[in-house]
Image (tube, rainbow, N blue to C red; front, top):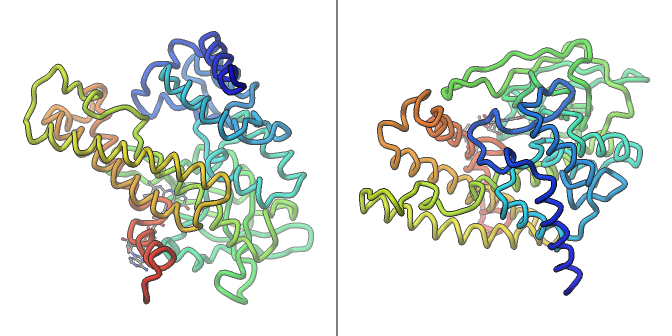
Length: 384
Ligand SMILES: Cc1cc2nc3c(=O)[nH]c(=O)nc-3n(C[C@H](O)[C@H](O)[C@H](O)COP(=O)(O)OP(=O)(O)OC[C@H]3O[C@@H](n4cnc5c(N)ncnc54)[C@H](O)[C@@H]3O)c2cc1C
């Protein structure tokens, strides 16, 4: 038996003993996800237990170093863990912008103090983060942001407004892009972290077509931020912002995998006869999804090894979001008029998911912007 075989056997035994049955059921709605944070109310004892045991083992962030709350797994071990979790249909113990976005940026740009302070809390699900990038006048043209952070000697004084800040009203802390100098557009940006309970921070939810209010306008009115809460160098926050965006795009592209498994099986096409044209579309989708999965595994391995082209998250994001939108269209087509009913068919989540998927090609940078990046940096086309 190789070391990896032994690791798989141990992992399987540990998961069998520690993953509650309830946490092996498919996620039915947004409410089944565990976001953590200081105001989090666990949906069940099983959800609390699952987060607790996984965090204690460092397996909410299996490939982060142990010193920072991670599992210290090698890339090969991390893949085995992922496979074993998928084998039993285990839910993710924690969904977190801290894990998928801020953590990687802190690992690369944070000071040792920042890493030791924030990363273990992120790994244990103790801080829920939101992302303060977009502003009313700065979305695709993100470097045009105007939220100002003035150097007041012992603190930064932040004033301005963000928009589309996902879960700002539920988050504990924000990672926020601010303008600290007017000397150049990208050159005068700094990346700040601060508590959403700091005096002067307020949020206003925005109601969407899906009936939910997942994001907010976020206002900063004379917010005092300690000087040591800058990540990376002052005025060089654009480097941190871009690096984090690569990880965000990788995370969003993962939606293309739709939790794994064939859509045909999920829609139970094997037992219920249906329109042959729809069956053909779903079969074609499943083939494309398998190809995407293979590409994704290769990309993630290269990305984690630092070998991927810096623009490759744009390819993944574009392909993954197109796939996810297609999956939702097919699910709605398969469900017929029942699927449109918001509150009935299985709690109405097909319609909610379908409407939510429309935002995939906007969040984390629009599809048009991803195509521009691919044209310029990968295809080397002129004038893009
Ligand atoms: C579900 C969701 C969650 C989000 N969560 C967050 C969050 O947590 N934090 C945060 O900061 N932001 C968040 N956003 C905002 C998101 O990052 C922006 O909406 C996105 O970057 C686009 O910016 P914009 O809305 O200002 O559109 P604009 O930049 O005004 O773009 C409008 C249209 O013009 C096109 N366009 C713009 N420039 C070009 C160009 N050069 N070439 C070709 N076409 C172009 C765009 O593709 C788009 O179709 C979220 C958005 C969504 C949908």
